[in-house]
Structures are given as structure tokens and as C-alpha cells.
Image (cartoon, rainbow, N blue to C red; front, side, top):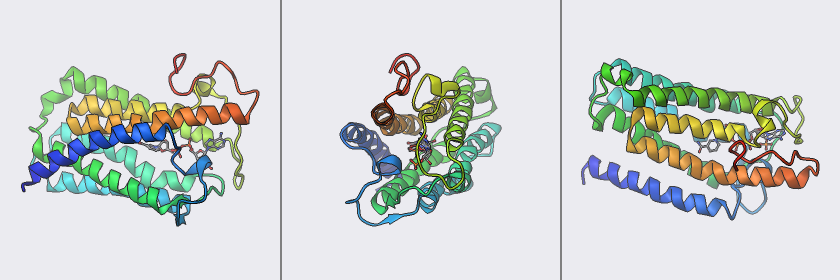
Length: 253
Ligand code: NDP
């Protein structure tokens, strides 16, 4: 079996699994954060859990960069920068900025996250730096790159801002939940998830690649049902929750 055949099989599996996860998450919340509950076996503290799950992404992607056969064109370097800017923060900074004691994260979820991140970083990195035709400097002037990179930056900024706003709802040592109400939180319950979805949609467009598309689809499959659950949870828990606020898409859903 060639690496190419394994790569294609893995890519196909990602699309299929995304569909299954999307459906499953409408019936059951992933058991971490506010939905942490007993019955999921051994768990790890949140900081360690995020660190373990997410660190595979920046490492595997960087290994693909160094071991790929392509030249280091400006486009390749920008892709590396985009990916690492997101994931170095997510793996090594975000976990240590979390507030509250938080429940444990089940090892099962961590293992699943780790597996996903490894496969996803491999598919994206190996494709960009090895299998796909080289992205030369002309790609930087392509409308797909320009629009995708702009979306990526918008999503990146929104995701960081929204996660920071949530953090600001707790004083150090506090663990409860409050109704967020600043900025885009006036319109939707989960602008952090909206930012994440915009980020990886931008990535898919900027790279114009199937692994990029698979990642964007996965992000929607993961976060759209979770946004719906968060929204219902807020409404149930806070009777005066702003009735006009939507779950994920301003004015729509
Ligand atoms: P949540 O919004 O559930 O929680 C983020 C943090 O904010 C947690 O520490 C949480 O505490 C705290 N928090 C949330 N709401 C409140 C509130 N109302 N009052 C006080 N504190 C609050 O996000 P996730 O943990 O699900 O995700 C974290 C990040 O990871 C997001 O940026 C998300 O986009 C990204 N992500 C990306 C995925 C992908 O597929 N690409 C998949 C999953 C996450 P507590 O933990 O105690 O609930």
C-alpha cells in the first residue's frame, strides 16, 4: 500500500466521520466544560487535556513542512505561519489562560481529540508540502488566496476576542457561569465558535484543498451542535436570557 492510498483513505474517513459526529452531537453533548458528567471513565484536568490534545497539531504540521519535498515559497511560509499562529496559541497558551476549576475531561475525549488533530495536521501538512502541486508566488495574488486569508484573519481575531470575553466573566478562582453581553455576544451565544468556523472556512478557501475542506466541515460538525446546546442551556438556566439572541449566526440561527 502506498502512502498516497493511505492518505486518500484517511481523507475519505474524515468526511464520513464528520457526518457521523455531526448527527451524534445533536443527541448528546460532548462531556466536557459545562456538560462534564460521570460515567465517562478516567479524566484529566482541563489544562493538561487541552495541551495533550492540541499539541499534536503544531508539531505534526511542522514535521510535514520540514520533511515535505517542496521549496519554501512565500505561499508555503504563509500557510505555515497561519497554522502555527492558531495552534501554538491553542496548544501552549490557551490552556493556561482558562479560569475556574472546571470538571475533568474524559481520557476518551482527549484520545479522540489527539487522534483527530494528528490526522488533520498530517492531511493538511502533507498535502500542502508534499502531494499538492507547489503553491508559487502567483498563488498570493489569486482571489481564492486573498479571500480565504482575509476570512482566516477575521475568524482568528473574532475567536480570540470571544474566548477572552468569556474568560473575563470569571474572576481568578471563580467557576460559575454568567450571561455574556458584550459585542457580538449581543447577537449570538457562541461567537467563539463562529470565529473558529470562519477561520477554517478561510483556510479551506485559501488552500483550495480537500484536506482544508474536510477540516472546515469537521469544525462545523463539532461546533454547530455544541452552539445549539449552549444556547438552549443559557435559555434554560437564565430565564431573562435575551430572547432575540441566536445560537451561532446573527439574526438567523
Ligand atoms: P466554551 O465556550 O464551552 O468554553 C470556553 C471557556 O470559557 C471555558 O473555560 C468555559 O468554562 C468558559 N465559559 C464558557 N461560557 C462561560 C460563561 N457563560 N461564563 C463563564 N465562563 C464561561 O468553549 P469550548 O471549551 O468548547 O472551546 C474552547 C475553544 O476551542 C473555542 O475557541 C473553540 O472554538 C475551540 N474548539 C475548536 C474545535 C474545532 O473543531 N476546531 C472543537 C472544540 C473547541 P468551563 O470549561 O468551566 O465550561
